[in-house]
Length: 327
Image (cartoon, rainbow, N blue to C red; front, side, top):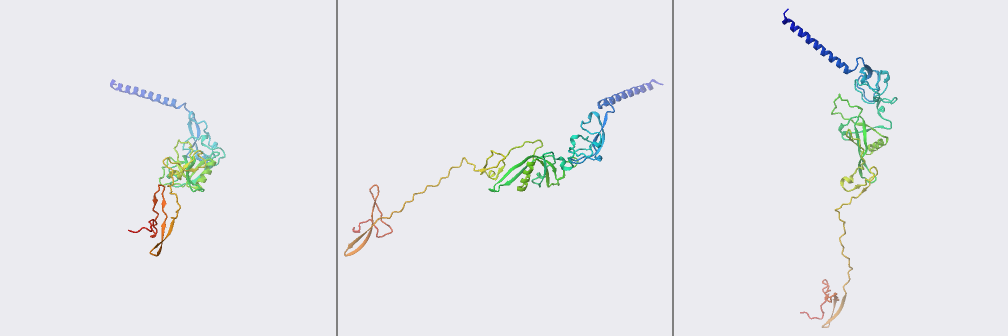
């Protein structure tokens, strides 16, 4: 056989052996990274998506092989261990089930299993405007704002009655399905809130006496801010509120203006009683004829001048001498 035939054959054999060696080394490396062969255990996982408050049944669960070093400490090895328990959170398909995802024994099913001890679930009616246009989802936190009328004086007060309460359900939905796109035309008429006993009383009073609104909080905002609310007089700028006690009763008082001057009544002239003018009647005889003339007694001013006190309405009244000859 010619050497030209042997050289390519030998070269192909060498390259094949080298490729097999590289592949074997890579397989062994992957096995070393994944862990020792055969170190797998069976744990209980969800066969399909499970909503909060649902009772777990055997057909909802499955056993799956999980690497031993990746098994959670509180996982379950058999389906019988958790059959009949109730889920507290949403569980996705294929997710290993642990104790923290389940409610306590005897919690019941449905929404009651999701209410912690000492808390209450209350449902309030909303519309497109008071319910944030349908943009809230289960799990978010809201404040409740209400406008209440004061029956004693007819004034109105708007204030936040409760803060940082969790929305447990929107309508009858308790979870948000990430695989299902939201329906833009869907509008709910009620929300269920998780609140304390005192907060539920405040919510009920606000719903009975006013029109409460939901105010959405940021996802990481848990601060509770004390506020005295806003009165109608404050919006008009004609009244103030005593904010010494933020949650006490607000008292309305006038606000003094620095530019307002005191109003004084215009001066009035003193009323002087009218003093009748003294008169004197004189009989005058001329050519055997007797006439009567009425004279006004002149008054003397402080500087000694004589004041004319003749009555212009009485033609017979004059300060002139009746015996003076006319010109």
